Image 1 (cartoon, rainbow, N blue to C red):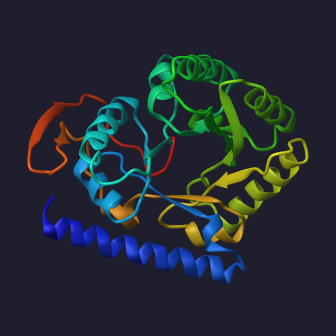
Image 2 (image 1 turned 60 degrees about the horizontal axis):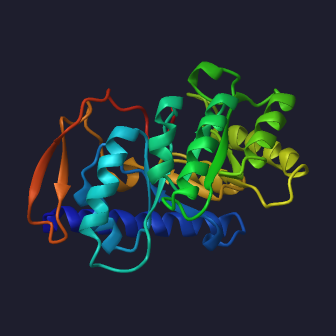
Length: 279
């Protein structure tokens, strides 16, 4: 980790925290109830370690292959830096055959949108709990589609019966904990209108559940609108990390606790989707 890069991340993080605090104040909310979740996909483990030193303890990834390797690398690197655990979030679309792996490393999954994925994650998380790999159930946000185009991820926000059925399945799963809803505004949509619709649906779903449900909503370009409409978790990539590579990096950097040694690690997954998204 170069001093220049670490200083860059420090400045960007401070600006984002100030921006989030202003957004919360403008909305009449307590900034402490809104999580700032760095999206570190396609960036090296060294960047995560630097952010850990700067006080971040939660990070988001979108691809299981990259995340699985990065989780191990970062755990080794921060082993001597403190006792606070890292919490990794899965924000990419989830394939059933990746459920077992995701249950090994993810604290939360933000992109669950069908019953088959729920069943696969439940089986895998329950097994991980039994084996002592997990200490608590996998936290799940059910993803909604705000424009009804389910091919891009999410349950159609107007399909109340199907949403209720999926939320009930998550809530009733022993290996999972239903914690809220997630959505991304459609391309070109008004962010305030989109997040207002998400908030409205969360309020409707909330009536069927005792636990307080959160909203995973807002990214670099629209976090203020998300905060105005009740977001409890904003997923920020570009505003914190800078521009991503145009294609998936061929090498993921392995780091040591001293960040002095790097070992190339092959990566063969496809090019990146937008930040904090499942698309």
